[in-house]
Structure formats: structure tokens, C-alpha cells
Length: 284
Ligand code: DGL
Image 1 (cartoon, protein in one colour):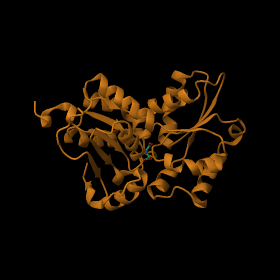
Image 2 (image 1 turned 180 degrees about the vertical axis):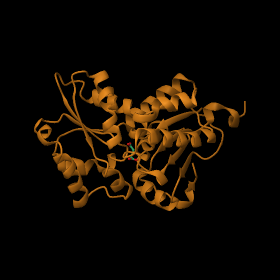
Image 3 (image 1 turned 45 degrees about the horizontal axis):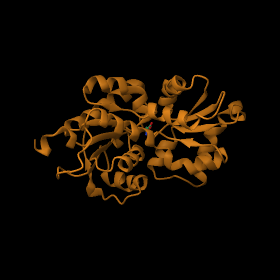
Image 4 (image 1 turned 90 degrees about the vertical axis):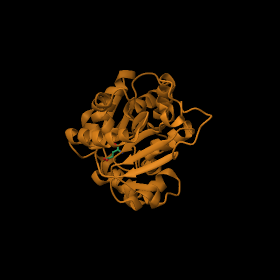
């Protein structure tokens, strides 16, 4: 069969509200370097994290459909907010397409990190308002570690700061401090781990550490999501063959607004020079 008509040659589709999901794309490209990827950032409607659940589900379904129409073999929901609100709907709508979210892999990463720690552990989940409200991280972590004490902290303002390319400095740190102060008495309990429960947050990790204090491990879902994607492709026989034939570009970027802005900030997230001409403008 010609490569162009084989499913294993199709790209992996990835979406987020903006450039945050590029942290997941980076981990995927490290682990699955031979695969092709098509990334969609729904920047016209960012942020998702302060929207209602119904709106997040609707936006996520539209973003996913755009990728499905391109022809993909697997969909990665590289957004915690969308994963927490919309994963069952996306799986139902686009079945039999495999759909992988980032919340369960994030919970697995935490539990792996804390596996050698006996007794109750205190985990802080920093995420968007929608993710914290929905409680998806609490459920996913407790399913693996029932004795975990989990504190959710909505830090929605960190999303537009990251989209602005502001990762450090006094303004960023004072916003983080303002959020951490909301922990009140909870802050007195020593933290065993901080979960960066939003794909926009990993580039802010050093600033979060500077405010939260040294020695608290920080976890995000990028690496464990890449592992879950590899396992799924293996299981369904969809890993891209090594004796690859040329079938389209290895990396495509779509955005719903301002390609030049996506290229500028996305390049920071990817550690890669990204030219505006490499980013296609699409309407959902
Ligand atoms: N990066 C997304 C997340 O992981 C959403 C940020 C937003 O749009 O509010 O939650």
C-alpha cells in the first residue's frame, strides 16, 4: 500500500488554547522523533481556563474537528482545562480515533515521583480556574494515591503572562506570590510536590520555585503524556515506520489568530526559531 494512504503515516494532532501545549509537543518530539505532528493553538479564543465547562467542551470539539479533518491518527489534548472538561465528549465524538489527555499522565507523574514516600503527602496543583473547579486532578491523583492531601490553586493570570512571553522577573514573581498567599493556613503544611497543572506553566517553573522556596519538586504532564502516546501507538500498530517515505511536512502549525504572534511566543516555548510564514491561520 502507498504510504500516503496508510494510517500509520498520518500525523499526530495536538491542540491547546494557545502556545502552552507546545511544552507537550516538545516532549513528544523528543520521545517520538520519527512522527509527524500538526499543532493547533486556538489563540483567538484563549484563555479557556476562565470559561464555563460547556464553552470549553464546545471550543475543544471544534478545535479537534479541525485536526480530524486534516487526517490524523491520534489526538493529543495538550491542555489541562480541555482534558478535564471535554475528554469523554471528544472520545465519543471522534471514535475510534485514540484521544489522549494530559491530566491522567500528570497524575501518574506525581505518583511516580512520590512512590517512595510513605504516608500522607501534600500536593499543590496549580492550574486554571476551570481545571481546579472541576476537580479532575484530585480525582486522578486519588485514584492512584488515595491518602494524598491535594490543594488546588487557580492561577489563571499566569496563562496570559506566559502567552506574553513573560516567564520571569519581578512582575511575574509578584503575581505568583499573590496566588500562593491565597493558600493561607495550607501553606504552613510542608509541600511534597507542586503540579504544574496547566501546559502554559512549565516555562514559569523557575519563577514559581523562586517564590515557593527551594527543594519542592515540580511536575508537569509532558513526559508522561508522550509515554502514553507511544504506548497507544504501539498498541494500535500505528507507530510511523522507520523506512519512511516522504509524505508531507513533519511539523505543521495552525492558529486561529495572529500567526506572527504565535510564531514569536511559540518559538520561545519550543526553543526553536519559528517564522510567521510557518504558521497557518485557520477559522474554526
Ligand atoms: N494551557 C491550558 C491548560 O493546560 C489552558 C490555558 C487557558 O487557556 O486558560 O489548562
